[in-house]
Length: 512
Image (cartoon, rainbow, N blue to C red):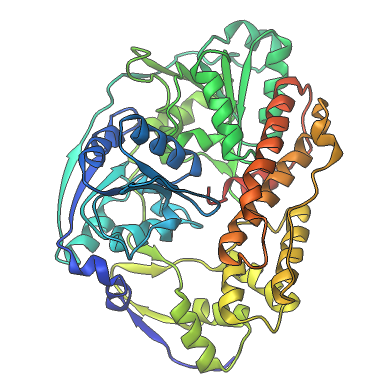
């Protein structure tokens, strides 16, 4: 590959957010553990503001906050990668953080779950929000893990900040004895389960296995895991919140701000697959998940437990150790302008070559920022170059950013069909509803989950290429049918799917 020097500076990135630079922004950090009221305090300011935006880590949270503002009499739009729900006269918006609009100024902005800066896939979206959201008052909520690099960036921009540290409003107690003692057994687990318990597993297979077993024991169960659509997860959350379900079985997705009336969190495992290998849960993960126990106003105390005694030591250590992140520089992603510049310098239209060059050869002169890994984007870029070599660079970049899991063959195949439609300028309609959608059998649960994800991709692309994906307005109706099937299947399923931990990890990394 050609050796072409391409130097970038932190000023290039900071100044690219022109509207934010025109405002005298003030940042108010609300930092503390879960159940400390961080987001609650910020939402009061958002609700009272003339205009504002809430930037969520999940679609589900954006939906929840939007409903909360509307219920309080504040018209609020909902904007995610897959949907636009607009209200007449609304000057407030709840959106996923990737949908942050740097060109529309507001009075108040909330950046939630700031510790997500550590996420190798999505952390750059939190950097872009922190540096680029055009609001007079910015409320940053989350743990204290990444405060230092955030403050360094704010001070370098000559912007002001203040910090409010909050404590938990209910005590969190790690139980002295595990649920099953020295060895896990069904006989020991059954009598120990109580209404309000949340059992945390780390794969789809384990969630479905526990859920089926608990139902056999006579418990009403709600299930939440990454492969479910936000609509289904919302329904399952509601079932648990209203008491229709006694027990919640979920992956660590509940650690990302979901407000659930959990009395006790039970870790079924202290390891999780992180995309490469199985590893111990870290301090931030343990605290975010365990901290969901003891919902203020519902339970006076939150409890934490594990299945076997030898797992208590790790959970105890993670609850009490310092969780300050090793993050010293804020991650930033490549911009389309940079892609265009490199493409011209290399005289290539292959976007994979451009991204690889940027990752391997570009020098970034900054004490504040670091380029995020482009490995996943490069994998998608190779596919795009191979299957649509003549597509414009702009359209290629859209497909490189599409929220899919290439390791799931069903998704990959549909992604390539969509890519082909754009490359050939051919209209693509929604998938034909399968006949099993009207059945009551739970055996098509996994197929329904995969169909739901393809519908999400279609919806996402319909906003990018409305002339190709012409059924965008019909996605909601079909997705509701799929969601209802999944909800009924979860209530009746008695076994588990064969999805691997690797696949479940990839599904949970989507931008909801």
